[in-house]
Amino acid sequence: MLPRKIRQFMRRRCCTLLGVGPMSRNCVDAAIELSNLHDLPLFLVASRRQIDAEEFGGGYVNGWATGEFARYVRARDKKGLIVLARDHGGPWQSEREVAGRYTLRQAMESAKRSYKADIEAGFEFLHIDPSADIRGEPDIDEALARAFELYEHCWAAAKRKKKELFFEIGAEKQTGDIGALDEVRYMLAKMRTFCRKNRFRFPSFVVVQTGTKVAEMKNIGTVGTPYRIAHELPAEIQLPKLVDICNRNNIFLKQHNTDYLDDDTLCFYPKLGIHSANVAPEFGTRETLALLGLFDRFGLEGLKERFLGLALESGKWDKWMLPGTAAGDREKAVIAGHYVFSDPRFSEIKTELERKLKGKIPGVDEYLKEEIKKSLMRYLKNFRLLRLEHL
Image (tube, rainbow, N blue to C red; front, side, top):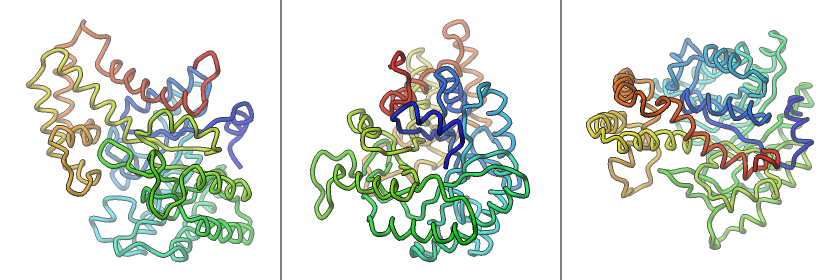
């Protein structure tokens, strides 16, 4: 089951839906503008690190708390085509919970309060992700038990607020391999039993391993690999099997970590029947590279070095690096660039940049937004989300 605007759109097109990570205010604006220009629904899929409840200090994206973010989007989405979605909600999905070494009960209560803020703000989709655990990866039954508790909490909260709510379920970490078919069947069977017993709406999406994983500025998963992987069936055999399992269970397959895949791979998604895919870090690095291009184009070496130093100093690149990486400081800074866009020190750099470029370009934000749109358009075209005249 999907919201009416999504159902109507998908009836008209054989497409793959796109979830856009709100990496910055410019990224959010670019998604809204393209959605309204081309009359197509786009999901804004916010992780708790990006956007979170006010009581948890909001997120790194524009300093927005959940309510502020929702109001910003609604005010600009004139056609009501943007779908607000929580990405990776659940215990230990907040840096605060990890740093504070929360117990399971503390992390679950924190996740519930975050979901409550989502529901009050009008988020339509909640991703229930119980896969994180600072003590070690939980087995499938323990993960499902946590998912059921969160699902029940969110359903009750939505009912109290008279809000229509849809769910995405996923209980495994991204490994870059393709998910085991039996585990997917098992998870969906358990979820169906739980929903029937409690008379809850069955989830709209299930997140499964489809052979994607982002590291540094590339996709290191198996799905785009041109050669065979030992002890693993090729993607062109496995993926249709996963899609078939989802279709038989009346649930849509959601792929995460779709960033940086080439056009030849992406254009097959609608044909394979992959229903939806999320992209996030690629839009952040695209904006950062566009910013660096401005510094280089106008010979602003001093401003560039200040920005690169700030991004590198943040350390936000660390979790994206491959073991034994050969990446240099510049690449690390590009990976971390979008994390510092809300830093007051970056605001000073940007103000100076705008002053120096006044009259030379329409505006720094306008320029960056148009560059992000180019990256977004790659997915809109390959996923067959555009009308023929816009291809």
